Amino acid sequence: MGQARRIITWALVIFVFYTIITSPTRAADLVQVGFTGISNAAKAVGTFMTSLIK
Image (cartoon, rainbow, N blue to C red; front, side, top):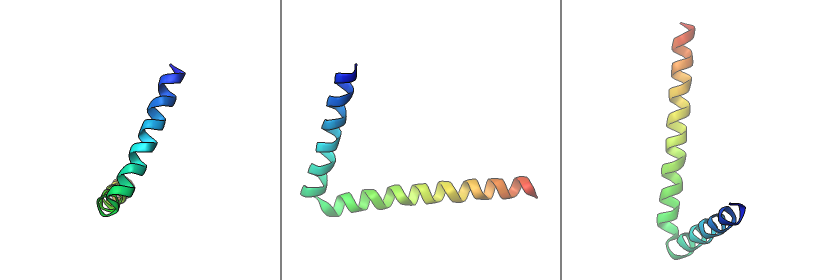
């Protein structure tokens, strides 16, 4: 099980580097989408917590 996890982790790391090297613009777009999603989720949690206090 540990060996399979190590192989999958390395495959994922290699895939990420390959994607960044071959298409940096697309990789930047994906990172931006990810951070936008995290930001929206944090805002939603903040709004929810604020509504609990009121």
